Structures are given as C-alpha cells and as structure tokens.
Amino acid sequence: MLDNSSTLSPSMFGGLISVSSNSPHLRKSGSRLLVSDLATGEQGNSAEEDIWHSIESNKMKSVGTPLSSVVITPSPVLLWRFKVLLFLIWGFSCCKFGWDAVMRMSADLRDLFLYEAFLYYNPLLLVTMMVWLWGINLWFFAQANVGYGKIFDLDQSHLTHIEIWKCATWMTIIVPTSMTAYLYLYSNGEVLLAASQPVFLYAAVAMLLIFPFDIFHLSSRYFLLRTLWRIVFPLQAIMFADFFLADILTSMSKVFSDLERSVCRMIHHQVATIAWFEADSVCGSHSVAIPIVLVLPYIFRLFQCLRQYKDTRERTTLLNALKYSTAVPVIFLSALKYHVIPDKWLNVYRPLWLLSSVLNSLYSFYWDVNRDWDLSCFTRIFKFSKPSFLSHALYGRKWVFLWVIGSNLILRCTWTYKLSAHLRHNYLTVFTITVLEMLRRFQWVFFRVENEWNKINSKSNIQLSMTDTSNEEDKLLSSNDHNV
Image (tube, rainbow, N blue to C red; front, side):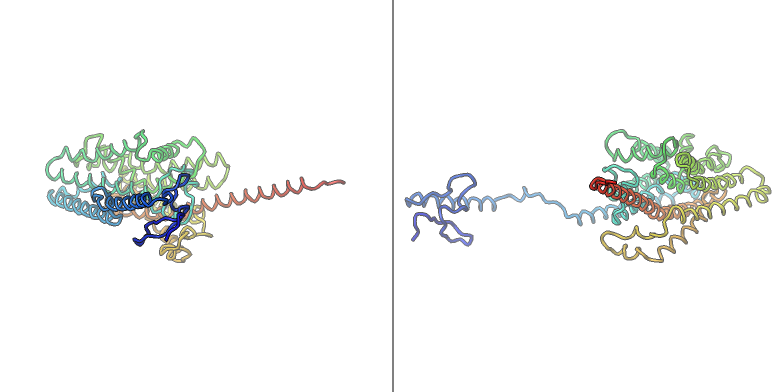
C-alpha cells in the first residue's frame, strides 16, 4: 500500500520503487513537481505512462542513430606510421630516380656534373642539417628547464622544438626533391628545365624569408632577419642573440662560399654547364670572391667585439676580437696559391699558412674551454626535470667531459682545412669536415647557453639579495626611535 505522499518510479533494474512526491529527484531546479500527488488513479497512471514512454523513446533514438553521423578520427599512432611510410616511399623514389639519372650520363662528364649539382644544393642541405640540430638543442633546453626564451630575449610566440622540426622536415623533403628533378631532367636532355630547378628553389627560399604577411612564422622570420641585420651592421649595443648567431655563421662560412658560387652561375647563365669549371672563369675556383665571402663572418664577429669594447671597456672583448682576426691570414694566405708562382708558395706562403692555422686552432680551442664554457657546471644542462635514459647517460658523466674537450680540439684543428681554398679540390672531404664542424658547434651550443643561463640566474640572485637587505634596513630604521 502507498500513501498519498509517495509515488512509483522506475528503478535502474527495471522495477518500480516507492519515492516520496517531495523528493528532490522528481523536481527540476526552480520548478514545480514533475509528478503530482496521486489523488486519482487515472492521473497517476497517465504520469507513469508518460515517464515510461519518454524512456522507451530515448532508447529507440539511441538505437536508431545512424553510424554515418559518428565522426571517426584516425589514431595518432596510425597517422604517424602512415607519414613514416610516405616518407620512406619518397626517399626510395628520390634515390632511385637520382641514381638512374647519374648512371645515364656519360662517364667523362659525370664527375664534373655531380660536383656542380653538389655545389648548388650543398648549402641548403647543410642549413637543413643545422635546423635539425637546433631543434635538438631546444628539446634539451626544454627538458632541463633552461629559459632560452629569456636568454635570447624572445617573445611568447617563439618557436618550440616541435615547430623547428616541422620546418626541418619540409626542408628535408623539398631540397632533395629539387636535386632529384635537376639530375633527372638533365640526364633526359631537358637542360633548360634542369637549370631552372636550383633557380626556383633559391628564389622560393628568399621569398619565404621576406614574405611580409602573417604566415610561416612571421615573428620568427622577422627576428632572424633583424638579427642578421644587426650582425652585418653592429650600430647598436650587442645582444646575446647577435654574437651567438654570428658565432654559428663562422661555422657556416663554407656554406656562404658555395652560395656565392651558385648565385654567380645563376647570374651568368652557367647553370647546367661546365664552363664555370675553367680556372679563369668569373665563377671558377680561382675567383677572388671566394676568400672574401669566407672571411666575412669572422669580420662581422670582429666588429661586434670592438663594439662591445666601446660599450663596456672590458679588455676580454679585445682578446676575443684578436681570436677572430687570426682567421684572416689562414684564408688569404691559402688563396695566394692560385696567384703566385709555385716556388714562392712552397718556400714563403705555405709555412706562413701552416703557422697561422695552428695559431688560430689553438687560440679558438682555448677560448671555447676557458671563456665560452663554464667547466664548474659542465653537464648540468643534461639534468632533466623528468629522469630519462639520456639524462642518466649524460648527466655528471666523465666521458662527456673528455669527449667534448677532445673532439673540440681535433675539429678545431681540422677546421682550417675547410677554410683553405687550395685544399678544396676534394669536395666530399670538405663536405664531411663541414658536417663535423656543425656537430662541434651543436655541442658547443649546449654549454654556451648554459653558461649564459647561469650568469642570468646569478645576477638575479644578487639583485634579489640586495633588495631583501635594503628592505630589512628600512624596516629597522622605521620601526625604532633613536634618541641620543
């Protein structure tokens, strides 16, 4: 028997339960009762039938929902595997078409043409590699909680390591694709179309950098161009990003040298020809522009040091300027081989070139270890906020210390090989040394940024302690009456 203050309600198990009419479960917030008093049986039956009817209709609607209205999204793992598969197919296709194109050429012209194709695409391939390495640097900084945005004075919209890797991925796809098209078209007799491939690629890169609209990371492109402008014309106070990027450009001087030769051939319509290979050609290996372009990054860095001395009057900046000035004799003494008689080169200029090379290598190595790096916290950059395999393998390990010191010394000595114009006949050897130099610069970035981060933190701690001390003194003076 149910009294007038209760009603029947369907339970979750399919039966009926007794629920009070004043129960909050039968009310809507701020409304009247959903089920009224069961004074008459007809009203109660109709209310109960309405409830059951609504439940059954909801079930029918849920069952009758078509599958086409459900949005099916692929799994991230499946999507990643699909991208990797497409990348492998693309890589295999480029290798296949490129190899067939090379084998189709005549044997007597094959090496010369490969050398020319290498010089067109070598600069962009090396830049792509440097972008990949820079993304790895940023990933390590993020794992170690190093505020590189504060160090480089970046805004909140600066690129993360993931965005850097996306840019590097597109560069990795576009540059080899253009190179494959260049080889394939030339081997099939389409010389004009082949010659247009590097021209279009360089023009696209230039347009992408100066594109004034808010796409393709406008703020980051503007920051890069502004920093390059400050490097070329050091008219303002030197910031950390200015001389940091200028140091990286010294490691890429070979890139700018090949870039100059490529642009020179495009201007003089020598693309897809071997006329440039003659020694007296305007774009040949004996061109005076080659040592000039090689030395420009060191001159820019030299002027930065002189500007720093003007602003700070620190003598260490003059010693740093002296380091960059030692690269000038290495470059120009090497270039003299093409402009003096062989006996004079062997007896006079070659010994001077060797002496200047040793001086530049040892001085640069000393400056890296004792000035740019802080050996007291040599591997702190590898202490991640979340422990991982890399953190365990790198943080606090002696082999990291020995590897960085030893490899930096060896690669500093071999770097003079790349700066020497008269040793550039073996372009594969020079390319290998350039890659090794970029790897040396890649590991240099870790400790140079860490050193700057420690300086910023120490300055902040000193300023904070001075502020706390002054506040305590003010409180003491204001709280006590000193009557003499």
